[in-house]
Amino acid sequence: MKFSITFKNLFFILVFYLSLGINLKIKSQNLESIGKENPITVSGGVSLNQIFYGNNGLESRRDPYSFFASGNINFDLYGWSVPLSFSYSNQQVTFQQPFNQYSINPTYKWITGHFGFSSMNFSPYTLGGHNFLGAGVEARPGKWQVSAMYGRLLAPVPPDSTSDNRGIPAFRRMGWGIKAGYTDGQDQLHLILFNAKDDINSIEYVPEEEDILPEENLVVSLIGSKKILDHFVLEAEYAISGITRDIRTSRINPESYKFFNNVGNLFQPRVSTGYYNAFNSNLNYQASVFTIGVGVERIDPGYRTLGAYFFNNDLINYTVNGATSFFRGKINLSGNIGVQEDNLDKEKVSTMRRTVGSVNIGIAASERINLSTSYSNFTSFTNIRSQFVDINQLTPYDNLDTLNYTQISQNASVNGNFIIQSSEDKRQNLNINLSFQDAADQQGGVEQNSGSQFYLMNAAYSLSLVPQNISISGSFNYNENKTINTKSRTLGPTLSISQSYLEKLLRVTLSSSYNSSFSENSNTGNILNLRLNGSYKIKKKHNINLGLVMVNRQSNRETATSDFTEFTATLGYNYNFSSR
Image (cartoon, rainbow, N blue to C red; front, side):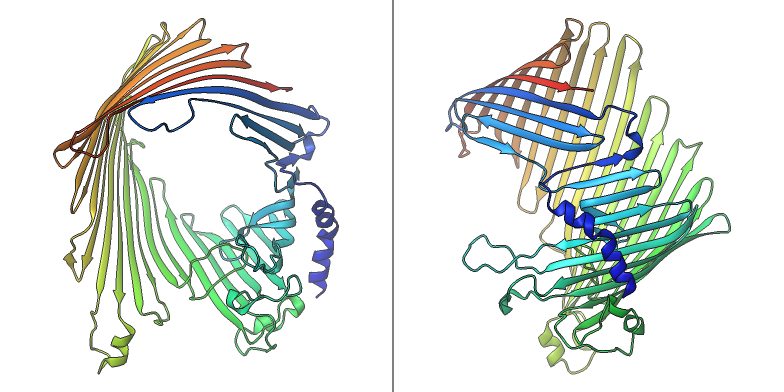
């Protein structure tokens, strides 16, 4: 009781003061910089764009003429930022204050504070990045580490049956947490306590059909790591979550998990309280040329923490991973494989097993040649049995294989980068990428009449003539998609040339692409795209740009689509400033 009251009083004044302020978005402030740099800086920019549009052969997709004006300004006081932005067009006018949440994060030496809307991460099983309105602190005096927080996790949302856009009712949820421990290199040990509780008086009565109940949660976790025999590192976390589904139910003193009976007013076990365990451990061996590790994770069915937005439970994972290098780092190899299974208490009518494996190879053949390849395989297996099978079977051995379903997804890719020439006057580069994806279904070990395959190939060449400020690039793209009923392809080249003038203040780029689409072996259409872009800089703060785009589509006469041509011209101006 003394700990709870002291902890709340420690943060109350700051939380109350901040809750009265205007909405503000503030980044981290380093208090040591006070007096060492400009106290206030102002930065921002303005942009104006006009768009002209015309077409032939289809219904207009936009107005013939439109313009947009937008701007932003940011005031910064020792890292305390107040951003404002606006936009205006011939269609609508908006003014934005993009700081609907505010936070102050001052830092001084080894102490960092979090005030206002913040988030902290203790561990995945306790407080895992949940936003809160309140205060927090992280202190690292030497090898000791202490983190603490207190604040509002959820704002009250009263029930409203009169509005079609009403939100889901919710009680006000307050929470606190502390993580304390010792770290010495790879050796560490931390104790975590996290508590969250709903205020049953924060909203009016919630209808039963909403299924919203006031909850309470206390999580206790022990997390640590230890270096063993110079090469082994053992990491582990064990957490127990006591969660009360309805704090209005009667109090009890459970026979198991008696720890929760001896924490004073931090948590009160009730009839609707459940206790769940989560465990995660990894053992890694680190050598000079390779690493290898094994891991296991088990989360009880029903495990939850109110310090995380989403949580997976009812699973057990087994993983193996490794990495090594050869020939002084010129060849790097890494891979992992894992198996996951749910339905740990055997109460579900289906059990899912997943197998995930991947391997990655990187080859630095020379300073100019780099190759890489990867492969991954995701397999999931589901055994589904109808409840009627369990009811009607004569013995436990009847209908053992009612429905077996396996889904397999494979991904493979190869990438090569070749530096053909690299000198002060000329640079040439070639890149080739190939990828493949396959998804297939099996039922009872038999391949099903479903699945798809996707192939992608890209080859790109670039040439830079440095003295002339000219860049030329060309590429060819091919992709193919196969399903059980269809086969489609799209392929075509792209060419681009760019040159700078007037000491690189003016840059002009001309590009074009031509793509053809096929269904089975029939051409369904061709698209020609032409682009001309120009950009001119004035005193580094002003920029004028012009873009011209033409798109022409020629469709196969047997298809339902028609030929069309579109033209778009964009004229823009940008101005950026800063008082730094």
